[in-house]
Length: 488
Image 1 (spheres, rainbow, N blue to C red):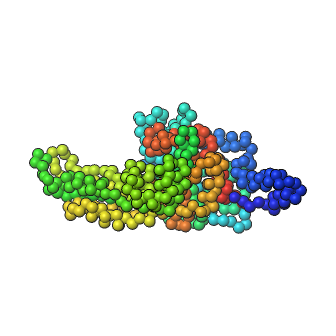
Image 2 (tube, rainbow, N blue to C red):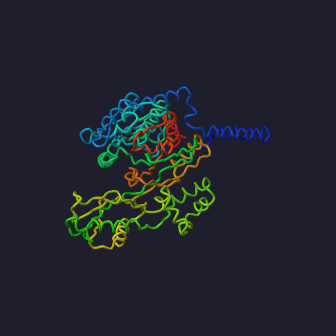
Image 3 (cartoon, one colour):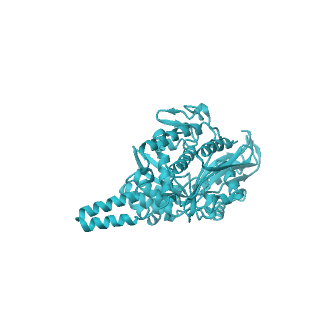
């Protein structure tokens, strides 16, 4: 939020000395309103409608580009972005780091003599697979139907890449004076191996310009009964620690059961693992999130949320956490059984049976301690547990006392009055984890709202986004970026 100009102070001063208290207060309110007005409020409504029309047009075009990963073919998306950036006169470069795969970088330079560190708008251009037989419309049609725009990527995350594109165009066309560079970065292969981001950091690190902030996917703005329940800003993510469990035993014909067979040993080991409860722990960011959400919960839960450090020691609360999927992952490392394997024939008892576990570690957690504990829990020398990850990435998160987080609060308050803006730790991985070690404060912020049903289409069938969100979302993001990057 900018400081009042000297003329604003004079206006208020003369109002005070030349009139009564009420007119003076009115002058102050007017000055304050001018001071905190959103950047988009200074754009004529007709032009804002044109940007909304462009957003609908461009997202349809973008959703029609098949960037299913594997194989990716993300250069198709890069070409889409490049044509628009070239036409708008925005500096950009495409990097093809593997056949058909590439990253696109674009930049709006600062216009001040002394600049702050840049802000990066990060998005990935690949999408997960889809089966058209299970969709109401073809996954790459970009069709408008029943008030939604349909297509693979409409929630993850071509919608957010589109909002970032429109925000860049708005900043350029409206000639917004910037005191920091605004960088647009579209990367490939986020959904599988993250090679796009890894390549860019390794080979084009200088183009990140020692950025201060980054906006990426990960935020969640839940719409319930026509009202936004909260604006959730992803400030941190859990990290994956996948485990491979193998049980060994005597093989034989299945007509004669073997009590210590590999499959039997595996079942007993998995039963112990799934019955094990990792310790509850409260991260500061989770404490802040729950405290902020307390006023919107029933009395008993509100009491627990306001003093979560006390609640985690109460047996009743501990039992309730087990039943609450949305709370459980915030307060502990989690273990999910995902894959099983054994014999390839029903009448053969195999010498080995195996399972894979998807383990998610909270920021600051030590995977080696958890691994040792699980081996102790299983307590069977014929069962091995080993990591599947070639490399463990320590989970990290960003603080909430930055100017970017403040800008998100300020803008959200204008668009969604009375709705809490809360920090979140997400259960899934995002590439924010790769950028924070570079000294960049990275946040997942989504300018769109979505119902639970709409959010559930991410990676699922019938992925779609409401037209009204496509028309409004880019403007929300534009205002956030302008707040943190425009000259004061």
